[in-house]
Length: 130
Image (cartoon, rainbow, N blue to C red; front, top):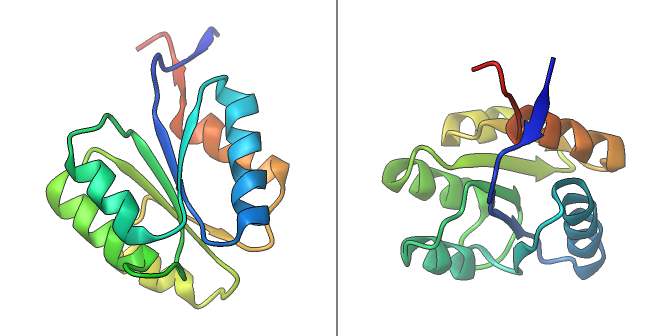
């Protein structure tokens, strides 16, 4: 079995807590070896995505300012359904809301490095046999 990172994958992280954002960004940058775009609110991320910038994966906390992660996901899925949206929250009940908004995955806080690596394995690493 041969696995390889999908070339030029672009990830956006939307998180208003700087410590959590830095943790997620550092983990993703380490695992995919490329720059990760960061936003501290959903509106800034939405503006960036609308300008036809090549984003493949959005990892967002549900509870971010301006446009929350649920609304951001719904907007992304309506405009560009090929973008993978992963939502995170400390409230387990938010998983159903995330699914209803169109999220491809939900991560319960607190999450760790292994949880983020599993997301990379699922959504970034491609089976070359395809």
